Image (cartoon, rainbow, N blue to C red; front, side, top):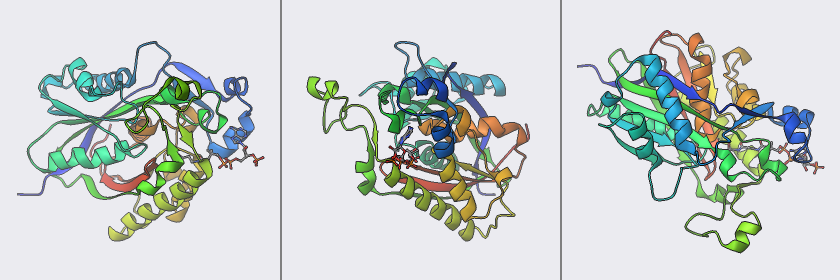
Length: 331
Ligand code: UT7
């Protein structure tokens, strides 16, 4: 019997309607469209404005998009993983709420948190459940409502992040398509450079820290940038090498959309032509766990069965990695 591989067999997405453009940001903080565009590649990001709606709202909509497109019965879904750095609440699983609300009433579910690498690590977890032979329908959702912990007076972070969600279904494949190899890493020494310090278990929010805005996300951009460039390029190069792939073999690079310059540096390291580099950062900014599935969603019509896709991500923690996957269908 041939080995079971885990293939992506469907994609869904959701983006909130409100567009926070560079022009609007110019009226909020000391910045300008030219600086943001040249330093990051971002032109606008989407923001979930509806009160009382959190990451699960985005996740549910993305999952419903996938379910409707594929015409699947949500009761057939056995596992729902919500990859996110911004869960709805503490103590209550965002994935459980999401699964129930999409009608996946036979599934178990859990959240997976690895900052901007959450979806990438989720791909590894989802694929492992399929490869084990125990599960046949695993729904992986990457969703983040970053606007919930962004300080819109801090120009170092508010220009970068946006809200959004993407979902993929993993199913067994017997043609050898799907996830081929992975190289996943982390280094806790990076924590100090990107974090929302207050509001977790180390430092619960107090009235004073709240008034000082210490619950917002903080980033030392330059250090994160350098580490992202080095590490994302490194794992991408290594995964190509150990699978005997050259730039000519690769159909697409799907890299975490944090900064256009980081993505280009990764592509340059493996001499990949710009046409093969998926890019949508200009439209959505950095949506943390949603960047990779949103790329798949935007490029789905161009993907062909057998296409060799290299995924790469880098995020807080630090966490990073690369995955090599063969696309399983023509749309
Ligand atoms: O997804 C998780 C991982 N996150 C990332 O990968 C993000 C990595 N970091 C970055 O993408 C970049 O570091 C940023 C986009 C955050 C910043 O770009 P940078 O090229 O590293 O800029 P910088 O922080 O070194 O700032 C350069 C200059 C400074 O002015 P001076 O000191 O040279 O006069 C800043 O004060 O740009 C100034 N600046 C801004 N100017 C206009 C910083 N932010 C802004 C802004 N608008 N928003």
